[in-house]
Amino acid sequence: MNHKPLFMIIFISITIIICILFMSYKMEETIKIKIETNVGDIIIELYPKSAPITVENFLNYVNDGFYNKTVFHRIIKNFMIQGGGFLENGTEKKTNAPIKLESNNGLKNEKGTIAMARTIVPDSATSQFFINLQNNEFLNYGYRDEGYAVFGKVIEGMDIVETIGMADTDEKHDMDDWPSEEIIIKSIIKI
Image (cartoon, rainbow, N blue to C red; front, side, top):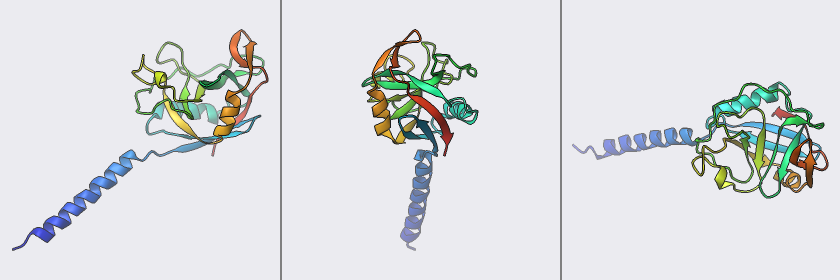
């Protein structure tokens, strides 16, 4: 009796199942948000499967309207743009409790990615985020320390990010690298 056809059917079936499982593991469910600024709009996809705590934290702020009328307060050319914590007059907004750092999630601080800002304490991120203007390998987990948690990537409006990244800066509100002309986050909404 020839078992070769049965063996082939079983082999192909198992291969298909493995491929489907692998693809579903690799596929990242994404959530899209829009950052509306006075310079233009930025669309970002968030990765809740890779950074569940970070995405949930960010979306809590988004849903509460926390980011409305905040500013990009720190801009360093060829490095990153940072926002999500200060009003135009330099007032720092009251935040929720800090979250656990999720920098060891396989996502890298590459050009166009969004990551949470934090202090030197690893589990200190609250509301502030930054968008990388270039590949910033030294911000990745394990390069020099625990790194910074990437949780999404710009999918539209990178030209707006780059325009913001070229803004002139001054010392304002006792901080370096504050834009000379305010770059306002009008709103961040889930789309």
